[in-house]
Every structure is written in structure tokens, then in C-alpha cells.
Length: 444
Image (cartoon, rainbow, N blue to C red; front, side, top):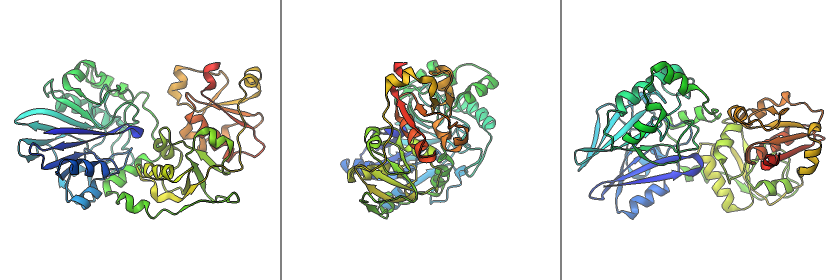
């Protein structure tokens, strides 16, 4: 028996393949959108993918469960409470899937969502590992505020937080200390707020160090869990529903996207998502472009800035980069909204270069927009007179920005300020001077 962990670093997402003792069958848990790594793993082991288990309909990425079923005949298992619209078998409390010396046992663990399950792997009669989905993370637990307006079952965040308290203590903590914990996410996910930088743990280690498993009354747990949760990207409810329905085959949908190499006279009639590095974007880009670099959490910011169903062009410098951008957009289900793929190296629009010394000497002559999250500003305020508008809210709060001074945009490292300055350039009058000061804030 072997357990293989797959990681999507951009979304801090883990999926798993469990190879049977006789190496004939593979069971997948929470597979990502691209089925190729799983097919390659099965082929390399001369095995067949026979089962796919979904711990819940995910909000932050699109699962490939339906395509895997269509390609391999694998049976999909999920909680009956999911209300799945695809062919599946119900998998809830006490139900097991057995193959030789391996059994998978469903444990209903509502809290992150009403339909969340954890999956206990029993090997040779002994509890070996538990796949906790978005219920128990390494150092944290799943957030309870994503299902108030979406999914087959909706629930208020306080109600789900109380369910999480009981799920952790009554369903997972009774497991033995040596049971390995395999979560669906690692540090950086927006499905929790304080995950440790580790990809696995044990029940015993989490019992000692995970804040959510410590002794406290339920009211204290609920208030702590709900405090300072990260923002909810616009695409999360959309992904829950896509996963409940089952997504179409990835490569087939990508093949329908028109790809072109426009000339310098091209005038886009929709937003252009320019995935090139910030330096290249500043040197020349199309009018109306948003700079969301592939070298970063591209999917998160794409789905945070653009609501589902808003059409956009996707631009990269070459075909390899464009293919990667399309696949990553599809990772959150946004491929139907790509009007066309564009391959371009430069264009006529340019951004104002940042002059550190001039800015330092004339700082009061700028309107400074801080696009970090409110909790980041609370912990470290860089400029006293900055206006805090987190990047996900920027397009909706443009009217709050005064236009009587040049605008300087900053964040913590440079990715968000590059995106924000491009959004402001596209939305504000042409005569507005907009400067991205990015990571230069360390100089002040």
C-alpha cells in the first residue's frame, strides 16, 4: 500500500492517490482539475483508477472527479448531503469501501461545509491515516463562512462554526495519536487562516499544537474561528456549484478557445488579463489590461478581481505561457469566460516609472492606496495617510479614490500593487498619474 500526495502550489491544494497492496487499483481523494498526473501515476504502477472520493464540493478549485469517471470508469463517492448532480455513490458515516487489506471509512465532519466528510484509511485492520479535507488542517481548521449563499445545503457561519467544534472533538480527536493527518490544503490557502507550513501531521501532534483542538468552550472557539478570516474571492460560490454539478473535460474545453497574435492596432473590447512579468507590462501593454502575473497566485487574484461570467482576453508572451495560463484559469473553472488567447510581447501603453528619491521627498503630494488586506494593515501600517482598499475590493470602490493628486499604489511584496496599478490605469482618466511602488515600501 502506498500513499502519493500531489500538490498544486498556486492554490496550496493537496490531492491523494492510494495504491492498493497488490498494486492493481488506485483510489483518488480530492483530485485537481488536470487528470494527467493521476493517469500517469496509475500507468506507471500498471494500476487502474477505480474510485474517486470527494470530501466536499470545493470552493477554491475545480475537481476532476467527473472527467475521471468518464475516462476510467472510476466510481465517485461523496456525502449524500452534497446533492451531487453527477453519477455517484453515497458515502457517509460508517460506510466503507474495501479493497483487499485497505478500507476507507466515511466520517461525517460538518463545519467547513454541511456536507464535509473525512476519510479514515484502515490498513490491515488498523487505523492508519485520515484524509481530513477542509475540516482539519496542519495547525488550523477550515473556515465556516463559505456556504451561507451557495451549495445544495446552505448554513450560517455561526451554525457551521459550532458544528466544526463538535466534529473536531467528537469525530477526529478520538482517533489514535499515530494516525497520520492528510489535509486538502497547506499554508497559503484561503480555506483557513493560520496553517503551518507542513504537508502532513498526526492526530497526536495536532492534539498538542493545533489551536482549534485545545480545551475551550464552544463560544470561545466560535469567536476565535470567525475572527480575521481572509477575504472570500468572488469565484468561490461559483466553484462550489460547478463541483456539485461536475466539470467538463479539461483539454476538450481548452481546445475551443481561439488563440491569435494581434498586431499593434488591436483594440480590445473586453478586459485583458496580461500574465507577463510586471517589468514587461510596464514597458508596454494593451489599453484596459490588468497585470496578473503567472509567477504568483494567479488563480486566486483572477477569481477575486473578475466575477464569474465576466468575459476577458488572456494574454501571454508565448504559446507555452499562454497554455499554462489557460490551464490555471481552468483550475478555478474560468475557461468558458476566456474570449480569446492573445500572444504579444509588447504594446503601446506604458506605466510611470517609480522614482524612489522623488517619492521620498514629495510623499505628501501623492494619494497612497494600500491594497493589502485590512488585517495586514492593522498589524503594520506603512504610510499614515494611506487609503486602505484591499485588492479584491478595488474595482468596486473606485469612487472612494480622490483624483486631485498623483496616485501611488503599494502592497507587501509587489504582486498586488502591480495588479492594482493596472486596474486603476484602466479605470481612471488618462491624465491621472499612477505609480506602482510595489515592494519598495521596505525603503521607508
